[in-house]
Image (cartoon, rainbow, N blue to C red; front, side, top):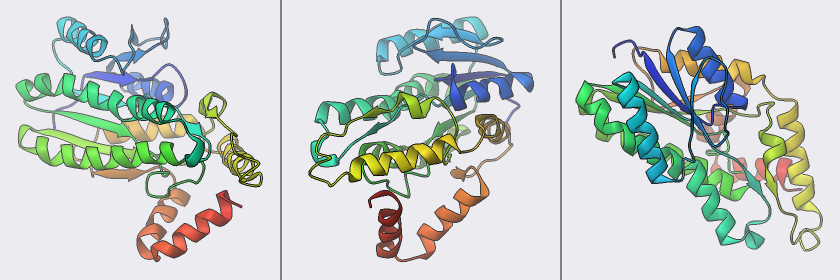
Length: 265
């Protein structure tokens, strides 16, 4: 893979995305940041864009290609979380979760692939989560969206391999960002579930607020982005690598029970 020069990061105005933008800028890349906010991070070229709007995504990519002439690297980071009992989650909320977390990245990828193919290669990274292999109770649709990202990215990787375009997904664990406060929480049915919805989300939020510095995650993502060769899937943090490894080694029934003991008591 040639050295990337032009990068596009979605959801780069805060949290992991912001730290990824900063890490890429520190490495000398020209970075375009796409988010719904009117202003972006200092040093990046900000374009207001809703990743769920295919027309807006196409327009943003055309603008970047018009200015920069190419896109070497796409990092699909935009996303948010919802929580609540799966039984009581409105299907519209579930679809909205998938529209942003999954189809936002799909929209960007479909928009940049033709230019990457024409220029002889590129790299696409998706931000997934440890919640993909370790499905979290009362955050079912968030886990579904991230598991779908893993499946989509691995399929896309094989489809695009002949064109010199590499695809990977990166799975962070608990990160200390504004993601926690932005989560759309619903405790509908908590009386039916004996307070377990509230307790489960409280445990998760405590872990997030005491989690990894997002700057560490941003630097990790930037390192992966600039490697000559990449693996299909990465996990950030030794403890989370161990967790993911255990999901492969232990019986699924045991892993599921352990997760339930932590997050569904």
